[in-house]
Image 1 (cartoon, rainbow, N blue to C red):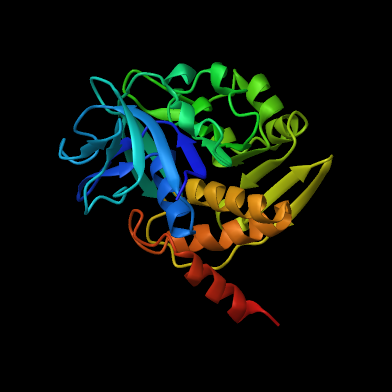
Image 2: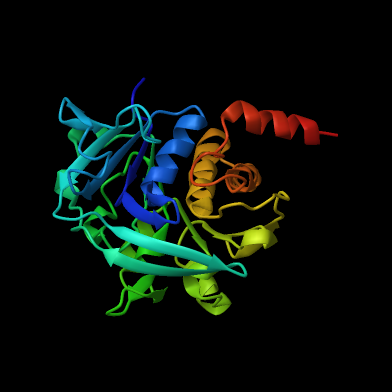
Length: 292
């Protein structure tokens, strides 16, 4: 099956109470794409141990994580770095505190495998400013989505992460087919969200239990959430973005895509890590149950 969903950014080591686990937008996106019936691939950078204590195999220049890894079977171009990007995420009263412990090097456009340049759908998913502006116009033949949270973060000497303005936004906003972010990414600054919406084709803003908002052609549309029993919200925005892009590619309808993405993301938070990211059949069954 050819690669039809490409995602670019750092795979992370997320420190959790039970130990380290794989994280980062690209990890959640690739797993979501695969469970929704697509063939994903990842371009990332990290240490040799990132994918399972160095036990991964290399086939045709791509790393393939071993059985037991959530990324098992997904082609990964793992570019070398002395360290892997590492975060600690803690949640209290619905608010996240995030600490950046280590940061891998950036990813350059010339490091993209030629055979992946025409992937049908591409998600640029920086987690810590690792994607430079040269990536903005690399994919003229693809549906390009962007989750800019990694450009909208700053951190102090202790690694404590806080919101920041997206300083290299212009070229990405100009070339993206959809930009997906959360109100948390902008510190709840609605005026800034409206400013961003005026500079791109389609802006999608997730807002936890309040659902999502679409901004397009000078209008805004609210998409209500699916009720869920939250166990672990880490990665929910990345799951939403992936499901949104996949359904947008299938239908061309942003509202349909956002409703679909809300369902996929809400199911995904009902178990730790990536365990609850649903298969396509599970989502379709839920939709049939809701039909009048």
